[in-house]
Image 1 (tube, rainbow, N blue to C red):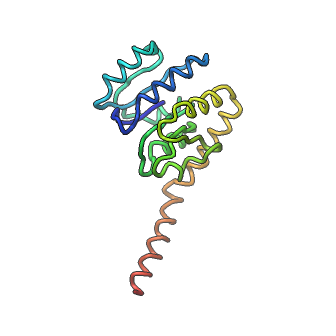
Image 2 (image 1 turned 120 degrees about the horizontal axis):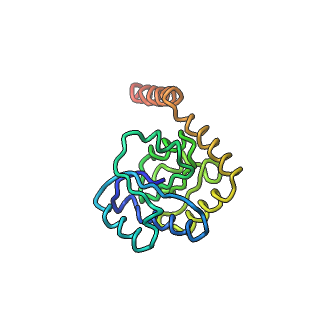
Length: 178
């Protein structure tokens, strides 16, 4: 599953390349691209050129993401930059293993080898290896899905707001004392 704006900084071509690698490795799958943007036509054309247009579905913007996330085993996030990675966190909350770049704040939520995997920006080969490994080992996939869900619960509003309140309180005290 890939979700986002179809724009260069989100690197949607890497998702299509990953689907091609997985198909070449013998995996039967449908790569779902959710979102729209200036690169959509080019991505549809790329899928045709690579002869995987039957394996990649472009569904545009969707309102009921929880339904889509619920049927996804792997969520790919190859972005050049993510300030926090809310999309990754939402995928983890739906028990989807995230394979992301190590850009921006993604390393704050995606724990390498436990809740998902991270690779350098542009390293499609590493992302493919991670995905093939997960899709070839049901026990590992299920264990990582559960760990991803547990990690997402750490960021639940009831858990995270007290952390921010404590942080803000500490900074307010420092500023008031200065």
